[in-house]
Image 1 (cartoon, rainbow, N blue to C red):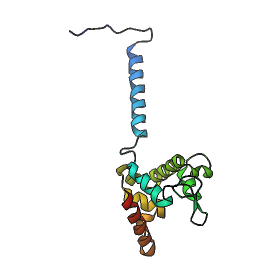
Image 2: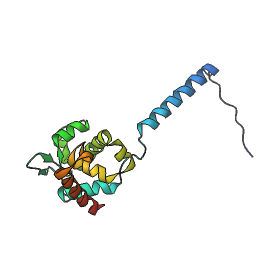
Image 3: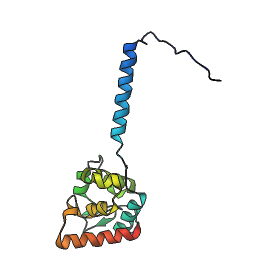
Image 4: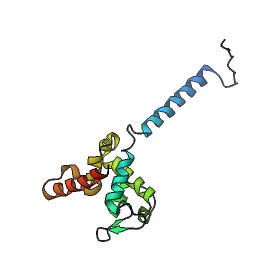
Length: 154
């Protein structure tokens, strides 16, 4: 047996207020839907593979590329700046912060690859920059070799 309840009417509960409230709720729902990208991220294994290849799973302020890269995911200062993540470059020594930087960078430069979880494209862009997927010659060979290392850890 269903219980029927009468709605509680408030002094401001008029058709006009209900319409305004309904529109406000729809706008809020739309904004929430737009804020969360479809296929929000690549699989966890992508980050684990990146970490394994870049530093062998080490944590902390690891310097690589002759001092030009920092942290467990070996982030260069220009990469960090391009990501737009707030904070300081020195925070790239923290794994969680580095993951946020990689995530923001990929959403900026490789949104389709990010949304679809295309680990090949994401790995190459992490290593070779925003135009990595257009690489030719020696750079392409180097990126393919990098991808092969990442793929072994996926």
